[in-house]
Image (tube, rainbow, N blue to C red; front, side):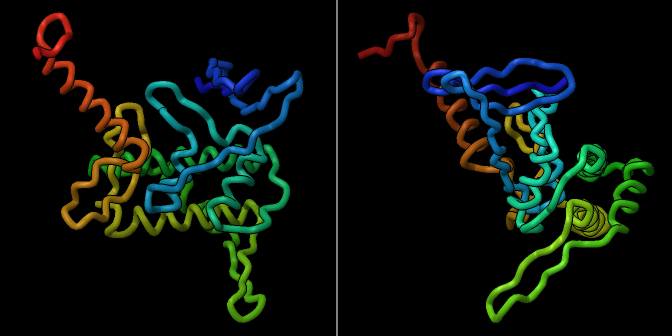
Amino acid sequence: MVSRIRLYGEGLGLDVTPQGSDSTILLIHAGERHTVVVDFTFVSDDLALDFAATLTWRTSYPIELLAEPADLAAWATQSGLTERPGRVSRAALDRARLLREAIYRTAAAAERGDEADAADVRLIRDEARGSQVTVALIALGESERRGDIGAVLATVATRAGELFGGPNRRLVRHCAGESCTRFFLDRSRTGSRRWCDKSSCGSRANASAYRRRKSTALPPGGKQDR
């Protein structure tokens, strides 16, 4: 089950409620509804892992960020893979979700040091056989990345193949954030990176730890001695 996110009313409050197997993001103001473009996050240090993170909070309150074809087109442009993804069909969206889940399960296997599922490996390999995104030189100092959504998926699958088929697979880590289910590459010199993003998961964890320390430091009754 995933969730429907609604931004609504005076001050644009946030209401997250389960709505079956899909999700949309709507801006509701003065009785009018407007689609809100998802602002995707790219903090995994690997594009394939960032793509796998388009289903968030998987184990607690899953939210589908690729709810509509337009969301997939937005991810393609925000990732920098292509400037013109073209029209995205429902069939392409379904393909993207299948690829995403195969990448996520393979990342989990890599993080555990297990064998990847053969069907997932085959799906990633087959998707990578398509035409890739290309870079066209426009002028000196100017280029353009070109490719439709099929080329975007093929390129993501190729990146996944490079990751899981090479030594960087040993760098795949799961974020230590309490509700975060994102994978990332730990390229730190000491191999001790814990958070997908220090400014979000890391800061929340530090704030939570600080509150716990403060609460345990207080005597019974909750007041500090003077």
